[in-house]
Length: 193
Image (cartoon, rainbow, N blue to C red; front, side, top):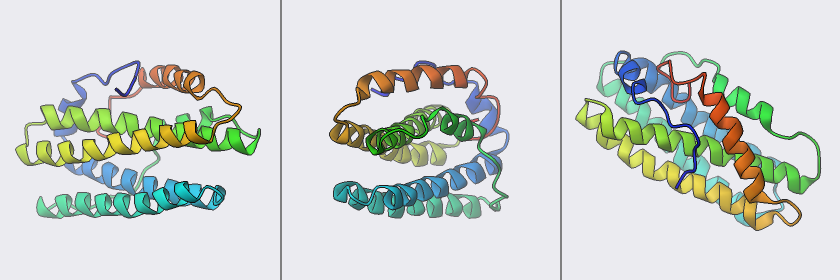
């Protein structure tokens, strides 16, 4: 369903299990950044009423997820660490075509959102199936389903508002680029790294 060209090495879960505090901290900030991205989309594309409505809901949901992850940390006697740069997101943002028409900028932003959600969904699936902690397996299963909905939403908005852009072709290009990125990631206890 997700179309990712390079799956995460399942051994990534072993890296994650060695430092649950790090993965949960990174995950919490990913949820916060997803909310910020949705706010940014509202600011940049207010003319799409249904997008504004959906992004408003997404902001609430992502902040609820942030709180859920923070509670997981607290429940385990762990603390939310400092935010660190997400190199995967930085690299993916660098791939977005700059300038162009408003339609192109909108499509690029939607495909960026879809890609981040697709990779998060894939990582959550891995955790839900392979992490030894049974509570975290359930936790990540529920979040995986949410990420799948978000991925679909972003792709659907790109297709809905693209009049002159071949969204399927551009999505395939995103998938190819992201596969190249993933060759250097999957070696840290971070959601995308």
